[in-house]
Image (cartoon, rainbow, N blue to C red; front, side, top):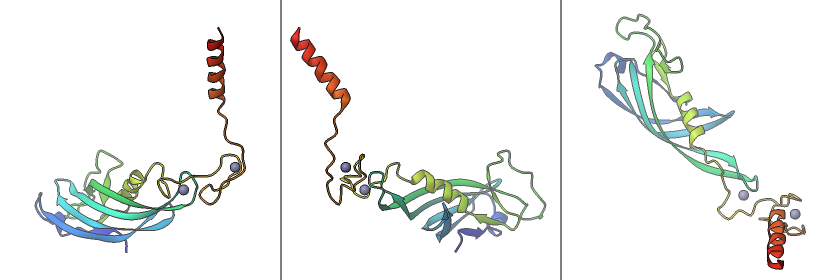
Length: 174
Ligand SMILES: [Zn+2]
Ligand SMILES: [Zn+2]
């Protein structure tokens, strides 16, 4: 089910009128269908409808250490004004909004939340998802998944540390 709503009744009501909807639908995100649900409040404004919504979904990402699949809960708060395209009472086309990026209610009074959800979903994704807090990740040399088994690569030697030690020796020597 798409996350779109017919607001033809609401836009005929006075500014300040409110409708509440439960959101339960699908949104395409990065080519995948994602389910979102939650609550939305639609408030009639001078130019359209202000939507505020608390929504939740489940994303699938890659662990930033071992590249395994991770399920991440996504929580979003949306607050966007949708600008009317036509006057609900007269049917005449309204002047387009100053902001060309503004969300629009279409000429059939459909308010589609999909793009707002998509943008807010992107912002809610964790920067570095982890399959678990103590994920050991992959060996940087041989690529072995260190969660599964260790590898036989020699331990990392840090060259900056060696340089520091050499310096310490020198200082001690003088
Ligand atoms: Zn991991
Ligand atoms: Zn290794």
